[in-house]
Length: 360
Image (cartoon, rainbow, N blue to C red; front, side, top):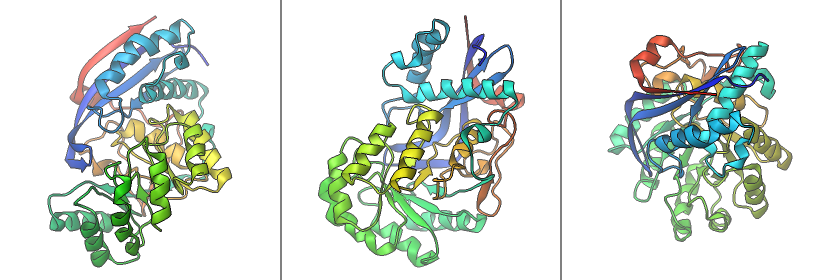
């Protein structure tokens, strides 16, 4: 791989089509950090998954930009290596993605081919954030069902769980693939209450307890019949191995940004496949840059559940790239060089708030 000649950090602000609420708060816009790598052969793009505030994990957009600027990018130029910096997986993942994209574009090879994708389309679901009322939630779910999404995920939290799940089941029946995501908002003492969700034939309950409470997840998993899926708890293949061995989960959500990059995401995929544990690809309200890379990952064979990688118009009226469009409940995996998409200059100009050039 040709070494980088320069790295660009670009901040953008994209308004969301509608507010997106979770147990961590409500987003009205996406504070996006893109990393662009320039080599003598090509350019490459990576998107940082961090949110504007450190609510999902400890990372946040401004902090990721700072660690890239002061610590990670300089180590590309002095050969110290990214692993000499502790933590900051989302910042590392964005830089690694941009480097890989540039390398693959220079070779004329697709990320899909590099990762070993098993299919050209990926079944996708939609995540429905916390809603102001049951009626609003049912209208939102109805809209996505009509659009053809393969699965619906409801965000839940204490006080907003059994009633909305029951309402969706009553309205749409048992054929709808339905799962819930608590974003760590419960405690092990809520296990008895979470048993009330077992009667709704959910695909899974995602991250019911805080990320560091693996033993609590074991206790919950022993009390409920709904499969427990871990998200925030899994930061590496080692974490996944520990969680599976303990019995803390039966399903794993993989996000490349959360685990430090695509290579580690593939290692988690492979580990889970050997253990007979299904995985699915989570989403972070990505623009087309991050969505393209995530779709290539989600096309690996053990991603057997619909991904949280909805069409572009689920979140944005205008994406940074050609929009990803839903067809028969699936999105197409780009097969061009690198991630297979490139941001449109007009969109970059419209949404960019700052650009910083880092040169050798």
